[in-house]
Amino acid sequence: MKMKDLLEQRGRVVASMRELTDNPGGEGGDLSTEQAQRFDTLKGELGGLEKRIERQTLLDEADRRMQGQQITGTGDGNLDRELRDFSLVRAIASQVPDLNVDSGKERELSQELARRMGVKARGIMVPMHVFEKRVITTAAPGGGPGSNIIATDHMGKLYIDILRAALKVNTLGATVLPGLHGNVDIPKLKGSATAGWVSENGALTPSDAEFTKVQMTPKHAGALTEFSRNMLQQSSPGIEELIRSDFAKILAEAVDRAAIKGGGSNEPDGILEQADTTDHDMATPSWDNLLELIGLVEDANAEGTAFLGHPKVFRALRRTLKDASAAELGYIMPELGTLAGYPVARTTLGPTVASPVSGSLIFGAWSDLILGYWSAFEILVNPYESTAYSKGNVQVRGMLTCDVAVRHTESFAASQNVGTAA
Image (cartoon, rainbow, N blue to C red; front, side, top):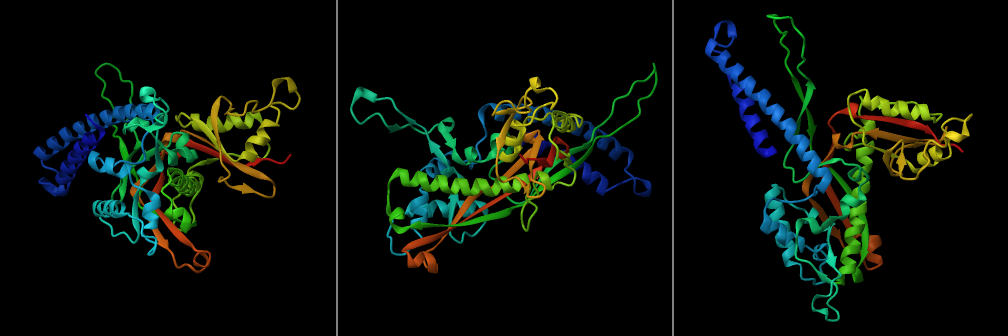
């Protein structure tokens, strides 16, 4: 059974349990005997469903790690095929009055996306599909000249998400929820049932699992950029790819910054902004300090998978001996791509401190970082902005609707004061 079906089934069970408690038929506002029996039956079903959901989550996570998970997709195969041919250049050019670029298809698809999302677009709704690129084959069918660069027919696994490649937190294994609608509540196990040993004929002490939720709500990130009129009039695939890549980098920076820390005005609260994220002192970097950082995650029964840190931090660790009195033990970070046996990702978006000179380092189980996307990216062109207009260019505003959530804060440990002074 698919996760969607399991969640729907659990929702029906919870609704039935709530209906019983909201309408008690017994004395003193309690459940009647029949209701209590029905409630216990539903409780057993809920426990069984939770176990199945846990198993399915594990399997889905394994599949996602092996194959990657697309950030996009509407669930409508016909629409998805049409969206693959959406041109970002034509979508932008369509909003410049005197360019006369044929963009009827882009406008029609934008209207369909807006209809499905239940919003009114102020510009052009751009599907996240445009931030994928199609693999081309270098084979020469028939051996004819000029036939060795031919785009393949669409197959899901032959699309490479350039937004995914740009996002550091994605490369570390963050969980992606595409195509969201409205606010999202993600169930979270707060306290689990406990097992105990008893003597023969002894009674077990009852214990119930406790649940809470992680909430995600649409938040908006925007960026302004500028394109020349000549560029927007080009039909070259290279120009299309260049503009897509530029916007992918802009979006990736906004999402990465929020996922790492955030917490500013209207921003999501990222890992470092979570009140319960363990903060570890590494003002004086050492091998013992690093192992303690890893241990903070392991002691919380989480399985850390990778490090994310500022480049200054990794440079400092590469020149710091494990033991100052035993140079033969080598450096804390002897190899460029790993730290204590774990992969690393570098980003300048992590916070730094000027005095004393220090940077941030995060270790964690990155699948517990959740990125939620609300389907589309909105492009609005202002061809009359004074500075751009004086140069014959057009100003373009891009808006992305997304949110960041940390499912289990104990899955992450961080040091925001790793000493980096030479």
